[in-house]
Amino acid sequence: MSFPAFIDTCALYSATLTDTLLRIAEERAFRPHWSAGVMTELASVLVREAGLKREQAARRIAQMQRAFPAAEVIEYEPLIEVMSCDQKDRHVLAAAVHGGCEVLVTFNLKDFPPESTEPFHVTVVSPDAFLLDQLDLYPAKVGRALLAQLTAAKRPPLTMGQLLGRLARAGVPGFAAETRRHEFA
Image (tube, rainbow, N blue to C red; front, side):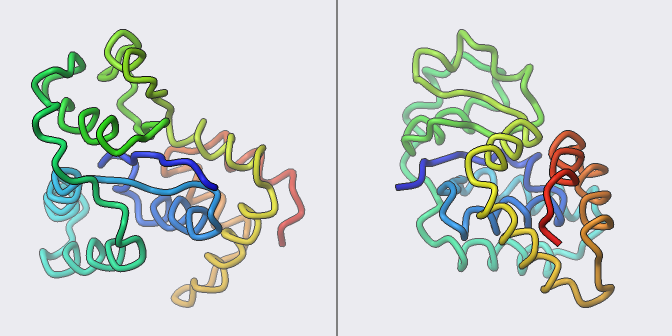
């Protein structure tokens, strides 16, 4: 059975990175989790920083929720006050803990110091480290996920090299470099 991983807002910002993460999850390498708070933050950031219209952001989030209906962690709010990580990220750690997640995937590593996560047995990793672990553990699943992502890319169509370039620019350069060593396409 795959393990649960909580995905922070910042790791869901890039459409390409989100697509890669969730396609790997579709291969049952891990079970993605998030909270309503993360989805609310994501909608706001997509409108404010990515320039999406509210409807576009809502559509993207709805697609994620339809694809993974069991991903949303609920009723985690009572734990927020006992979290000792960065105050603005306590809701994230509380949801990860309540959701039974072993891993929290975020670019904001400094906001989750070990003394705030270790008591709850949550390991905080960057998206790059997380994807490198997935590649190491499940190379065939990662390969299938990336090939499915290429197949779905119609406008414009992408090569594996172009996809990996986009992923590197989205913050996972180590994963992109290591994936180039595999013969997925």
